[in-house]
Length: 241
Image 1 (cartoon, rainbow, N blue to C red):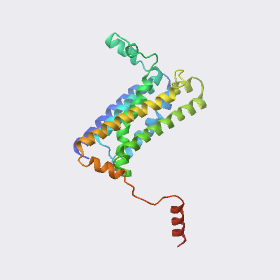
Image 2 (cartoon, one colour):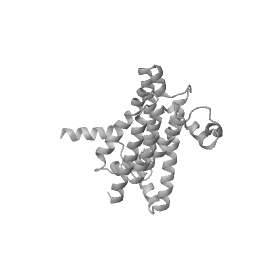
Image 3 (tube, one colour):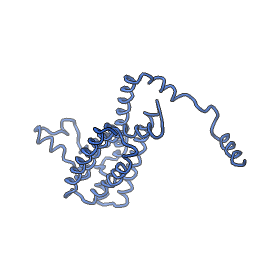
Image 4 (tube, rainbow, N blue to C red):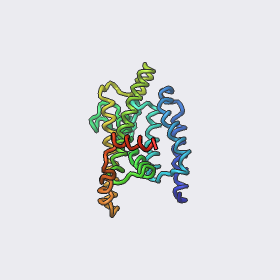
């Protein structure tokens, strides 16, 4: 890690911790705050324990930082009650929701979109540096990861709402009466990831001289033989030797 990298990460950590501590004071619904912060309690220690062996780029750390800040803000108020419209009205004298024609609190939708937009690139780093994927797969796998984890999160929300029920379940679910809420959230996360990966691909296409070759090579068949029953037979015979 470069010296600038070493200095940059503590600054982000300090800013995030400062926001987290301030927003941990008197959240709107303490029990929902605890549920929402399970993600923080899981991800932050993992990043801290692995950063020496696997330091992300400053770009990725910045994207993770922005998403984390949005998430802890949503945890403080609950996603359905973040008063962004009141803040905007106070600053401009106009309603942000009216300006965009929104009829509900869409902070949760903004964060779901940001999940794909901001986290697809850090996930791409993991795929490239650990799995060694290249070309086409370096863009489609992060998109697939965002889509699958977005679905997993919606299932977790449904499970939590079912288990806890009542006001806590509804606060955590944050559907605001929209029966298609989960579908829209997953779609927005997917759109965000598509935008992030499209931008990354176009930037690499401009900067990377062997972009077309790498893309073509990633789609070339490396193993011409089928890997079904033939492979099982081969492995079985190998085991018998």
